[in-house]
Length: 442
Image 1 (cartoon, rainbow, N blue to C red):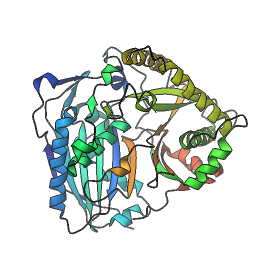
Image 2: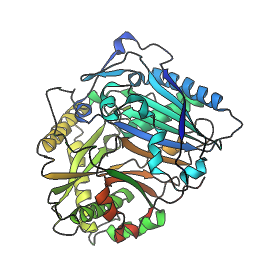
Image 3: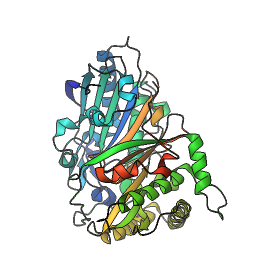
Image 4: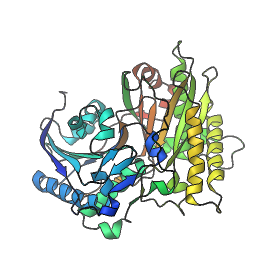
């Protein structure tokens, strides 16, 4: 089939519908915000839509409700200045686009990952890696297919938003479009510095000089509910009281396959590390509401391997559970304040980062977006038929896990260097539980 052609119709700056008060003009970034690389957290939402509703009407509805949403989430209309966000109401970018040679069904049978990036508005900011530190913090692109279906691509700077934050933005925005915002959504707040210490420009973290210089590829692997049940049974250790969760089981399997694929290269002798971000809102719900915006996550090295011996899934599950229990012990002291727990976790993370060298370590990250309510994003024309999430520019050695539409399965979007992916995607144990990039039913 011919290559998909996306034609830009309009580009606009959308500003908050009300001016941000003077006392809210500066937002302090946390130390964790500061150490994150200049990338965007991105989400793709695909909809079948009543073609009787014009593109002009849909576009105006999206922009008007986005403007109203920015009044609540005013930092997203600002600009980063050092270790703060200047909440100056400069606005967010909104792009309208059209695909005249593809239907939505054409695109999703199966999803075309080479064309997926065209559904993001990053072409308006030049080099995305540089842009995320200086350009608008929020970028949105609405792309209309010739059949009436549409895609909404959302980019929020990772300096100010994790996966839960982009989900909260989309939930607030879609509720505003339905005129149900006050009833449907708690008012989100950007107060992550109430948890993590404020950013310090003097602190630097190791940088991977090879990042974005390797030829990488992203592929989708879908684990159906029935296969997840089989995997959980296989992953359970003999002495386990209960089967591991879906996410832990898939993480353990991906780790096994990552190590096997990397070890197949004769020149790879780096120590392989698995990094796992934990959404702390779910770990400390009494202190951190789900609607809290910012980077309210804890990243930890949870597994390591020198590649000399095969990873066993049951052992990986056991070690992942142990790391989760260790984190729970750190945060469960009820006598400690929110900021004391945050300081303790920040020190742990910074200590881990300071010991890591990209010259001798090869990090992999598995980030779970499961249980985020992205499939509930109804702007007035029903729920999405497919949702995907990632970061941009894409990271090597990254897997993003997201619920399937039925809420029971898991989709893994895996980004690896091309030479690793060719081995990874043929791993027989992976293919025993996952199907590679099946069609999305529209």
